[in-house]
Amino acid sequence: MNYLSDRINLLAESETLAMTRRSRELRAQGFDVINLSIGEPDFDTPDLVKDAAKEAIDQNYSHYTPVPGYPELRQAIALKLKRDNGLDYTAEQIVVSTGAKQSLANAILCLVNPGEEVLIPAPYWVSYKEMIKLAGAKGIFIESSIQTDFKVTPEQVEEAITPATKLFMFSSPCNPSGTVYTYDELKAFAAVFARHPQVFVISDEIYENIIFTGKHHSIASFAEIHDRVIVINGLSKGFAMTGWRLGYMAANKDISKACDKLQGQITSGACSITQRAAIVAMNTDPAESQDIKQMVDAFKYRRDMAISLLREIPGLKLNVPEGAFYLFPEVTSFYGKSTGDRVILSGSELCDYLLDTAFVAMVPGAAFGSPDCIRISYATSEDNLREAIKRISLALNNLK
Ligand code: PMP
Ligand code: GLU
Image (cartoon, rainbow, N blue to C red):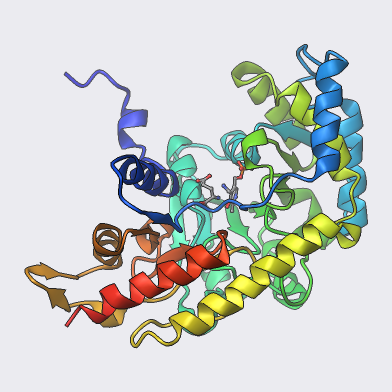
């Protein structure tokens, strides 16, 4: 008897986490798996932040915190948003949560009603679709392709808007494509949303520090839509703090109060020790942080190295992502090829084949709404990357 709720039965498992689980299981069985599936920096949290956490433990920050976060942290985030993004928010407009994932879920659950439509450019980050499903809303996906660097146009967005559209959500830099929208492109999107006052925008900016060309811009900086944008960010990527679980959102006061109420019934807020450490992280200007600079330089070096090695493999189509730490090659030229009785008919089958035979774990593009691609995370050592690409190349050459 299946006694679980329809809600949970309908929910898909997170494929990024599932692939990581599969590669851990294979490793436990003794296989030499290289994991290029999980998107998390392989760097250590900066010492200053770690010291602040140790101090917080010694100073007994062990009680419940205010649900939306310590006032000093919300103030530090407001200052960060001004310093780094030129955005004006007061501390009351900020809600701190256990990871950007929870901030996203809070915002979606507070904004959309069952049946309403949420526009999402594809490829999109894996959890957006499932969070929308949990809210009972309908995801409407706007297609892009490698030919346009996985960007959608303002015309495509406007065409997709209907009276039922409540929300548009995207990440820039994008997970999984690494695509970064320019100031002018964001301005053109803002002009579309200005014409449709019922549409809110979730702008997921968690990769803002990991950018190789140009500069990160927030769509919240356009006055005509500022009040309808929910900025999502967190410490996982920029400060190499995935396990600490701290994210935040900034929005108009009605939305932030609603998220505070929701979180007050579900988690009571983020960990007290993490919050104290986060104050130090937020007071760090990324433009002046050697830790962040070293990490971003290393990602850029690996991106360039991986691209030049992967470009030697006939059939893989690659673009040059400008941010985050993923490559998202298109793999359609391998469809119909085979080895033994194994025929490759999709990106997911190619991913399975590469895990089973080359022991390299990646995530099928289907998880991100682009089934003809696969996602390669280069947040791993150069040695791992070189070895993984060598294995991928051999396995792909074996397909005839
Ligand atoms: N948004 C995007 C685009 C991500 O890649 C991630 C990484 N998991 C998140 C949100 C969630 O991050 P967090 O670890 O802060 O929950
Ligand atoms: N953002 C990472 C990824 O996409 C972490 C995994 C997750 O939170 O789903 O791989």
